Amino acid sequence: MEIINDSKEKLQLQYPCSWCYKLIGENKNNLHNAVKSIIKEKPHSLTKSNQSKSGKYVSMNLELLIDNEDERKYLYEALKQHKHIKTVL
Image (cartoon, rainbow, N blue to C red):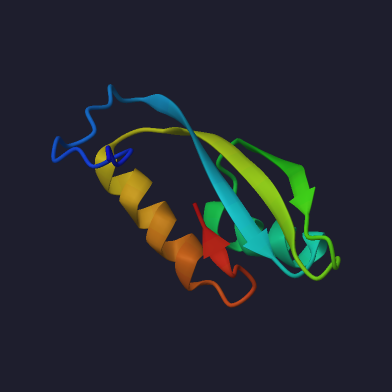
């Protein structure tokens, strides 16, 4: 059986590049506020993606221009650690 994404190769990106994070949280307003507190004035797009069947969780797509690998990793960690963001993909 082949496992998807079982590659040992490091992802090679050319910066700057457009990047999308999928964020999951309990409500849209909290996700908006979390992103604003982390991203600050950096241009970005935050759009609704899906909602869980029960309505407890909402997912949103955060798209922005990333300048380098360190920024990409920093934003991932900062988003992941925010109290209103349950999951970052």
